[in-house]
Image 1 (cartoon, helix red, strand yellow):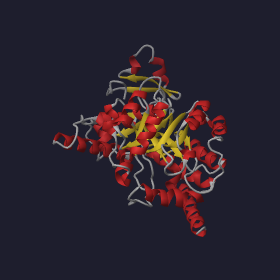
Image 2: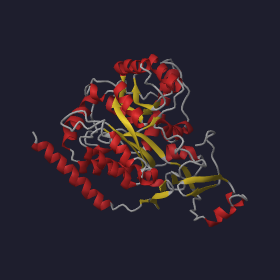
Image 3: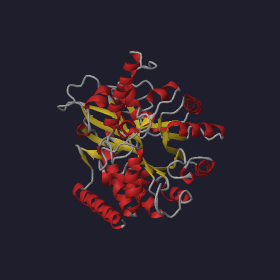
Image 4: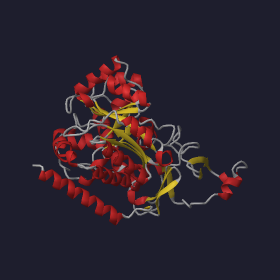
Length: 438
């Protein structure tokens, strides 16, 4: 996914944690010959080598309760069951278990970078354990810290973020980064969690970006215009969902070059605002958004699902418009969708010069995907194979920073039986505490 979206029949040379060269016949290049000769070789014939996917927004702590509210009808139902019901009963160790499970699942399905929007930071220890889970899995992790919506907590956020950044930023071979998390408005959880001058100043002092969740509808549109007037819109700000925003809000966002993180299945399945992912609106103002998983309590866990959902929904809208039901937009190609799931996702969370593309100088965050399995053979178009044909079972290997996280179809160094015991123990303990408190 370089700027030309090239498909190369050739080799990738990795040195340390970095892509050193890409192209055909690397062994024949005079300047590379000795280095290639010394390299360990991985045979990827019959495979596609691709950038790792980038998940721009996932609430990782919730994964002990995957698909527990799969048929939730609206945002209020999610808030009541998960953020008001379960979240107050999480101990620090539950944060670790949920976040670790989410990160390992991401790696297994080819997501090499995950932004964990960790909005259950009830204490310093809750935050520490969530970050340590990212470190222990080996994923390229971005911890976006935010205080809880409901229930008792220590009120250490956002002040404690400085300590966390000082202690953990750059940990695990430089894989761990930070952002400040916030909400768009004060409608749900009050003014303390809503983005504005106070939180913008905290982020600026720490030199971290900001990710703003629940950017939905007319009130969020007004908030965006308020941020524009206050000069708080810039390319270090990422707005999540962006569903049902006004043209004026989109104009302001496009002028500022903000990041956008879409959650295609979340908007459609939970029914957020109009329930239509805002891909056409973003592209119309020159913004190319990243994609995200959002909440596993109700949604799928992998980027293949997000790519296919967005591809189908956008093309459905484009066809409907061509028949007189709205403004006609160009139809997304499979290359467009792969770009959003990789390079544009990285750019949306401030990592565009680090990961998301298979080009020299960037991190060796790579997928090796089998293209001769029963569901992918024969290989005719590698991009379409990734977007429309493959799934997690076809991922033979995953590298993060040049290190193998998955090899021969299995996560490296992960005791799945022990993980299962930890997850079940944590889930049952949270349920017990919740029911005992009633």
